[in-house]
Length: 205
Image (cartoon, rainbow, N blue to C red; front, side):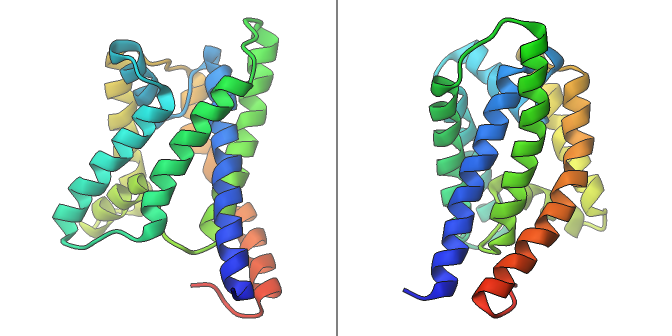
C-alpha cells in the first residue's frame, strides 16, 4: 500500500467524519437554523420518519442516480462513499451528542459546528478523490454558463425552500452556513492540500 494511497484515503475518511460531526453539532444547535441541505433532511425526517442520516444518504443516492443518467457516466467510488459515510456518521454523532435545550449551549453547538464542519469538508476535498453528490449538481449548473457560486446558490435555495415547506428549521444560522462556510473552507483547503502534497511528495489533482 503506497504512502499516497494511505494519506489520500485516510484524509478522505477522517475529513468526512469531522464534517459529519460538525453537521450534527449545527443540527443540535438548530435554534438558529441549520445548513440548507440539513433543513431539507430534517424536514423529511419530521414528515416521514427514518433518521436524518438516512435521508442524507437517500437524497445523495437519488442525486447520484439522476446526475449519472444526465451525464451518462458512472460516478467515482469516493462519491458513493461520501453519500454513505457522511449520513452514517451523522446518525452516530446524533446519538452520541446530548441534547441541551438551553439557548446558550445550542448556540455554542452551532458556532463550533460551523468551524468543525468547514474544516472537515476542506480535509476531505484536499484528498482529491472526487466530489460529493450535491457538488455534482452544482457543477452541472455551472456547466450551463453560470458561475460555481450561482450554481451553489440555486441548489441551496431549492433545498432550503423545500425543507422549510416540510417543516425544517430555517433561521439566520441557515444564511450564515450557506454564505460563510466558504470563507473557512478555502484557507483550510489550501493548508491541508499543501501539507498532503508535502507528505506524499507529489501534487494532488
